[in-house]
Length: 159
Image (cartoon, rainbow, N blue to C red):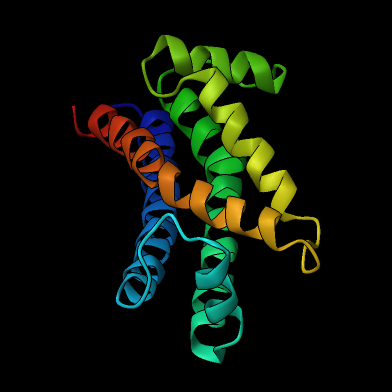
């Protein structure tokens, strides 16, 4: 393994570790909320969550960790795995995603769904309970997809 390849592998491992940390903390917050609520949540459950400081902190952690995970994957992990595979990353992000799809790491359409959700989260929806409920339920449903992407990258690194 050449010096460059080793450096790129270390970058992938670092970004992968950071991503798994965010996913683990996201799952931990869901685990805590699931002690009292079952997902998908409805409006009554959501009102109970926001009226309890501890539950609200967990829901805030979900949103924060999802955003951090999605950012880390899109900004660091995807580029580092392509560099490790010897690919050029000086291209539009859509081309990067298409390369990852060819490697069976992601589905481009599903990634855009994740990205759209992350962009929605960046706006403040404190006055729109239904939108906030939808965001929490969608993050809950996307956990497995995020884990699958990370596992796909980990499998490439371990080969």
